[in-house]
Length: 432
Image 1 (cartoon, rainbow, N blue to C red):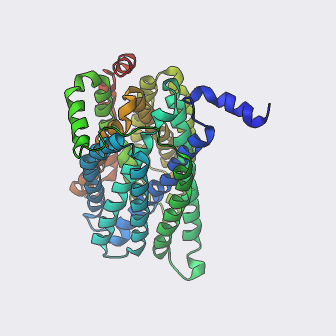
Image 2: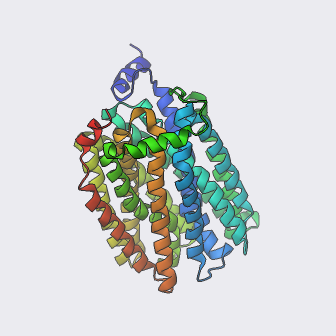
Image 3: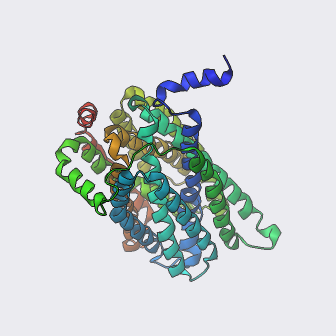
């Protein structure tokens, strides 16, 4: 038997009948592609640039950044379930994914023209690009139940999420090279940020190509001639809400723990520079290492989740988030902050992958885009609550970032309390 045939036999138990390894790899490549956007724009480079250069370190700068993110997430809350239900009804997940990808890439390119004082321009294209990114993330996740068997959802989700971190590493590594060679080009670190936006957009576009070439749309259109079918499907879901009790509890749990996760993603670089005194190069290097930690977390916990149970694995990772916030609060040296940051990476990879797999496990197979749209509502509400809370605390307390990160830990504690009421087996039976 050829090596290729043997590897297919090994992988087959994790995949649904008719799903080839190449297609799963193409689906996972979308995680690889879009991770550069979150890593460079939201986590490591542009967010700190917005506060320090675009907004000139004004007292309201951090709040303005979090407000722009909040607007983009509010749009996702409104549009996510509607577009998801429409994509299910029309079997058009891949089509909507293509449009959201194109818009995110174009919005990222537009950020290259930001500079001192261009607050309105920067905020506008953060809203546009992050809205499109979020829609794409929901739609890509909706393919997961079509690809993986129920008992292997955690494993396959972990494959994609861990590969995604390497996409972030690639994009950030290229950006680090561009920033560190700025002086040799007669430029400055701040002026080099525009170039990092072009690099990020190019990585996104090229890495996403396999997804659109090889990923299949297996769903079949339903009610294709009814103009209001998306709203009809959402109303049906609302009427049947008691059937999805455990999934709705997962959405509530996700809203709180993702509030903490979103805060770390949006404000890690700002915290590193404002509290720990990191320079741009230091922050980029930190995020690079954290991405490696995140990849190991997503991959390892993907396997652990299928063995120990999806709820138990998620509970463990949320508890680690609580530990991380305490360590970050007490960090007074660069070494201690590196420990906190790598704990965050480990938690981020595992909790994001675990949440996606749990939603896929508890969702009806023929409504995956709709339910991932609703999951998107939960985590985008979280993405408003967490960063806005952090931004408001720093504004009210005259930039007390330590208190803000400590209060972020309260979101994780609440999510643990909600998760205690989720019954994994019962939730699965309700949708079979």
